[in-house]
Length: 396
Ligand SMILES: NC(=O)c1ccc[n+]([C@@H]2O[C@H](COP(=O)([O-])OP(=O)(O)OC[C@H]3O[C@@H](n4cnc5c(N)ncnc54)[C@H](O)[C@@H]3O)[C@@H](O)[C@H]2O)c1
Image (cartoon, rainbow, N blue to C red; front, side):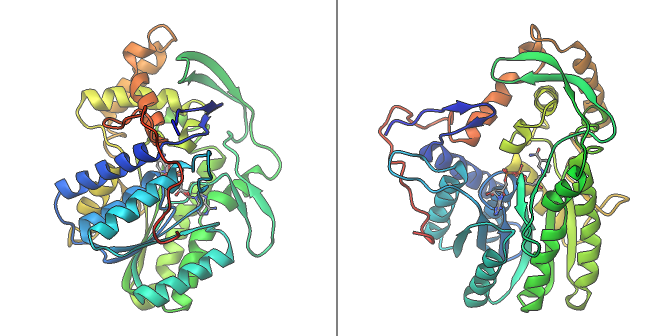
């Protein structure tokens, strides 16, 4: 079929298998171009199909020749209906990994559930024995709690008072003012239950209990801080509470892994266009201004550049992992550089519909957004008849 982008609100309901494949191939080429990394050899990535998790899986496999197991929750294709992009990404990843002689298997299901955890543990036991790196990169709006059966929904709201600021509809380029009402009821608890550290700790406890973590194993989860411009809706909002919980969980996990000399880290990553970040008001305007400045300065990075740097310059240098005063790895250092933030803050005041395509990188934002779904990717023939039914080799 001929596959075109179809938009519904902030999401694209179609995705292009060839575009996703090309994106994965480009990321693999990037990792190969940067040379080998002396990293972990048996790696579990939870949230492995898009964004930072996919970049982590690619970096481990093609930077360190690692065997990888990827867990994700994606929609498979059916005749006449495309899969979600993470499905096509994972299909392309496995094909390329297998071609390179690397072990790669995937599990598609709800990582919050006991069933998917057990399925993953069984696979590790059968095929790898143990893992020495666990990347935790889930981003989800809901979590069915495996013990209580309660369905928790996360919200992206400020805490305490209404937040009013500028935002942009990146499709139309229209800059407007938006007011976001503060959270209420159990919003904070629910958001912490979905995006906090409880599930990460459950994974690590389950792996440890069945002796599936190698001596000295490392686990890393991803967080975000960002500037004061966005803090009411991000770091000081409901999602920020979840990130505080995630960061605190790293210490608890490190303590629990003392017997095997294991360590848990949180890495604070840069703001990037993903399905999740496009849906947060205010953030797209911030990202489009940030991209403009970082590209002008020659310091712009995408997920793959970020994770390559995380592995090469933080996790696997042969020395102690450098962390900030709160014990976090920082690869948002370039985003948070004072000169970058000063310039973004100045542009923020100036930004209006009429000048945003000039002073901000609206085009770059849109391109990254379409790229997430495999559209607008250089080298892909979008007029060609394309088979939407693509299998992931290990799933079939
Ligand atoms: N995007 C950013 O700007 C940014 C910046 C810093 C940190 N982060 C953090 O990085 C992490 C990953 O975010 P991302 O932007 O790469 O997200 P993403 O949406 O691209 O990826 C999320 C992954 O989680 C998987 N997933 C979601 N629900 C699942 C479930 N129930 N079971 C199994 N898999 C499930 C998806 O299949 C996908 O592989 C998050 O913790 C996020 O907060 C994001």
